[in-house]
Image (cartoon, rainbow, N blue to C red; front, side, top):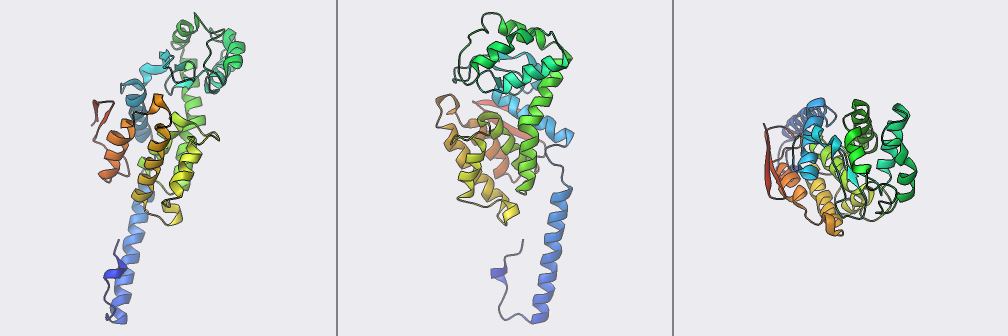
Length: 272
């Protein structure tokens, strides 16, 4: 965009009018291009988002292979499992298994619902061990359970990230940055939750919808995200921000266009 400070104060009024008209046309074209660019909910962009998160969560681009994933990673959230890291200690795993049971009564995970309610908010495996991980992997072979994982991912994390990102005037990269933050931090009231990461960013920059520069705002958000990650030992490795999201941002790839090259935890990834 043309910097108004560079315009000569001695320019003729007619000349200023012509320049202003040209600037307005340029701005209109930029807005049209941004509006026309697909958001993260475009199927191709969403597939990219799934692979990016999987590279960080599972060290693999094959996100569909993660329906069966389950382990306790020692982060105080109990079991972490599935395509988005549903946790037995944070409630989203309970909601997922309840949805699955609503759709497939009598499934192999249904008997664990009372235990999942008891351990919610803790890192306990009480009532889940020793067979819950094996039963999760059995359930993951059922397409009904796979679809339930997809739907809960979208309801709790993906759709809110896209909606909030659009409201803030962000394009696909910004929407993804929101999505990845929601996946890791959730949207609770604690200081490291998504909403408070965003609030921290807003103290230093404005999103495009509030007249701010998109790149400047996203850097502020990532700064706040890194702060939040470092508050928790299990998430203190910030490479998913430093050598992935910031790489795309530095290149000005606000529409998250391929090819993409990045690193997470020292491993290199590519989407052509």
